[in-house]
Image (spheres, rainbow over the protein chains, first blue to last red):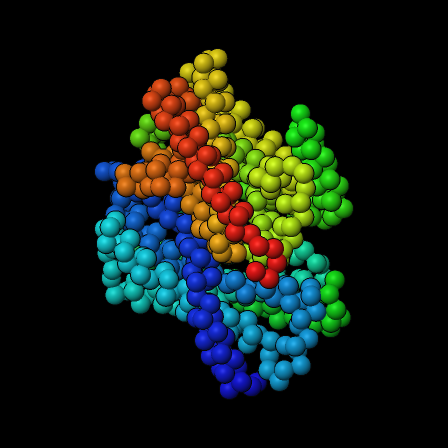
Length: 263
Length: 263
């Protein structure tokens, strides 16, 4: 593995993306709106009461953290990998003496930097206006870091194996749209998982989507007891192993089918 | 009459273009159903926790969601595809293809607004009307003829406001080719999924007076439930008329700046 080349690629992509930041700021704005809508709707609905154990300020804290976590774990690379395969542009990456995975990682890192430059000031301003209430304990803060890292890896590799299906089907990106819809419903965006109706909640706990966004947010905002925390990590790690295996498998079989032309 | 006949021809030509791609049909179907499911479940989850918020209950909010889906469907049926063809780096204004629109012996604004259709949006229209129909049967009071007329008038007003806003963006393309205005607007337009009453006061003012997307869906939904006042009716009709005139003037003013390709 050529790690030095990989790092150089990451740095170059990062610098180039920061040059076009206006465009990426607009994208980040678009991604921020859905969680922002639910922040406002739930905090208005809570009013002076508590809903599902959360009061108005706790809803604000939950969704402000969710806006950041959603952006940090969102992997837009998954949408471009499929295009590279479909249009035959994968050639350029395959002849390089480093793994094409680095190309995806480079845009991942570049994206996170550019989007955070936009998101952090806005979330800070919203926090000043809306006055969130966050009971941060050292345990939750400490557990948040691995939960966030695993969430990013899970969301990235889960999308990566789906995107690689483009080796077989030209419109595989339709499956990515399904994944986005499921994340919207089950990963704590439409409502914190604890507030979902029973059927949806059980589905959310078993399926991988909650572990891509909602789980780290619940950890940081202190919604989970010790057993909830450990079960969460177990599910997250289990789904990550499955996602990594599927990605490696689909890549190995798929790249042999790659015919280097569009279509 | 001549204009109506032209619209029929435009729609037929667009249908023939679109019917050539069958796989896209099924993917479009999938997207529409996902959009419907996430919208409906979002409202159901909220009202699973709470009976009413600021006077909005499940039936009234579902009716508003129906209005949102209907208006969005009308937008992607013809307003969106026609006007967005002007914008962007490969848009008609930047590449000079707008010459062919200008040369036709019909009103340019009419042609620019009605020539491209996306017939698949009719399916979205049916889904939206379905949500609206179900919601109306759930409303606590029966639908009277007055309410129905007020609803149809306010729906027309809402669509006119949306058209005026999109026409302003199309007009701005003559100064700068970017498609960015539309993207920012798309984000704000999503806020029209929920009633204005569910947002904090300052945002309610912004969504009524600065970017009046709230008026587009909230007022028709209020007309259905009979909670709209005569002042609001008159006010939104006045706003629609003023915006339409302003947008048309801006568009004509922009047209004079057009200097064909490589300008």
